[in-house]
Image (cartoon, rainbow, N blue to C red):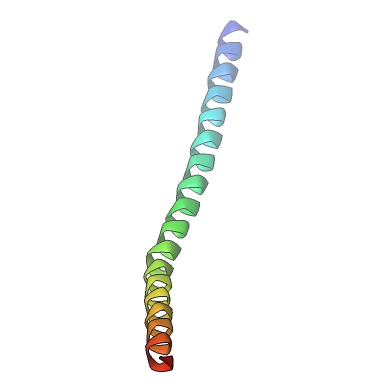
Length: 64
């Protein structure tokens, strides 16, 4: 009986560890997705900002 209890405790421990690893994997996949999105869209945002600033300066220069 004592051996069965030990085996059950070990199985519970392994199941908990497995759940933790699955949760960590999901967290890392979400972080990877976020970083991929940021890597793609941040340069676009910078280009849009530079373009907007250029158009604003050109508009000010042409009005005077």
